Length: 92
Image 1 (tube, rainbow, N blue to C red):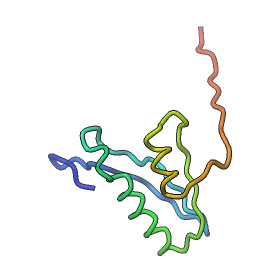
Image 2 (image 1 turned 30 degrees about the vertical axis):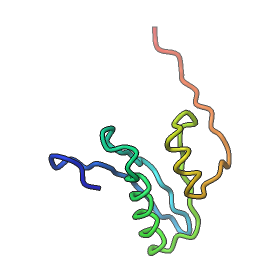
Image 3 (image 1 turned 180 degrees about the vertical axis):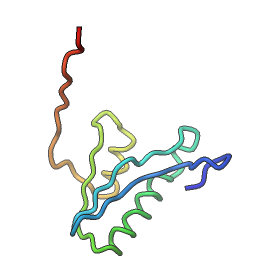
């Protein structure tokens, strides 16, 4: 999606593997948020995925990203399961 000064205002990725479309890296420039750009990006990616034969979709989102969780819920996504992230201790 167009932004300002030649910099994209919104981006996203989708990989189709067989029947599955995996969405990731949906981002909107802070100054352009709350204008429906993420929904438009998801729509464009979904149309492309459908054209490439996808019939199911998945994505990952951080639980505390309330805006993204709300968007994906409005788009019909539901929670399948939660991940737990672990970090190794830093070297001394």
